[in-house]
Image 1 (cartoon, rainbow, N blue to C red):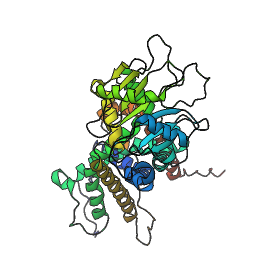
Image 2 (cartoon, one colour):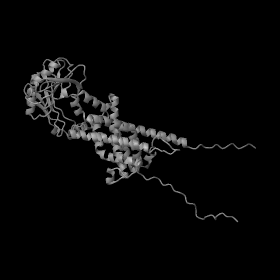
Image 3 (cartoon, rainbow, N blue to C red):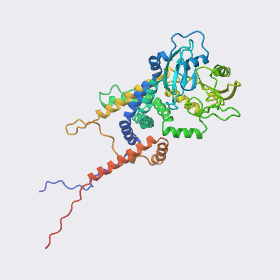
Image 4 (cartoon, one colour):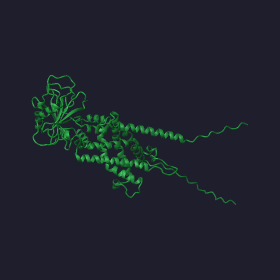
Length: 479
């Protein structure tokens, strides 16, 4: 007798594999992972160098105290003409291109052109406005001291020139993408108030590290977006596109015209005149500087100012407010020293809103808009970003397989094919949007295209390796 069970009349059940739900999550996770791994070193450098630059005013006052700070402030101030004469006696070469009168404990700064320097650099002589004594001289860059120039160059290019500028633009181009992607991924895990604090009840390991990484990132998101956007405004490629867009919207910063009526505009004049052109028939009387300053003050130009000395008598003087603290003072006037008339004027209140927004953003990015508070906020952003990066790499290490048969130095990346899980409308909207952002921000678009090409190539190679070999049937034996 057979002991086999009778066959069932019902057909066997088959396991039906359902397609994954259409969602952006896997793609965001893969993009955030790879962008974090590959771009984080550049962000770390930007955070460290930006942290140092944020406190460059304090460092300046410590390193260049003799040049920048008056030893005994107080008393009557010497006329600017006398201060310029004292600076000229110390530095007889070159033409005077600009004067920044001192105020309080700050010394007066007198800029001189030099044939051996480019138009961005000048020799600056510092004068005690109370005694008329010269306190020192430095080679400056756009009025910045050598140390501040070094820190600025370190932050923007790592002292590698135009090639180095690509590092900071790459970091700024991807910072917003990484920050927003991480915010959305954390929102998918934790909703509401739980997003703001790490899960301290989680055991030590990747879950606890992820909590600190993500919660800190949430607090930093707005600040990081601000740094990314303002940093791109003066970058090489994205900055050029931004400038073109601002010009098209008539939002550029206005400037006063120094051309006098009935006279051609002087060539090569202004703040950064190198004095390399042919000699002119008329020369500028520097003794008129006090009268020019008086006219500017009578017309509401006050606070810290920069006086641009014209190249010759056919060009007007210009006096521009340089106050970077809120509320920003950037009014400027052009003055004919012969008649004492104001020939042109530009008021910050009349600037296009886009120009104001750009100027506010630049000052805030440099830590100047709100003084020490601004510097401390930038420092907090930099330190927070450093912590987020360190925690991100720690998670990558903590996720590594540790079993004896599956050891690996780091964690495995998210699975490929995430783009296949996007909803159709997401592809229809997202592809043109990504192309638009990639065109405006090339150092986002080019690395993204390179990543996609490499990812597809690796996937194709692995797919071919996994294809089973087709067995070849032996030929039938002959009869």
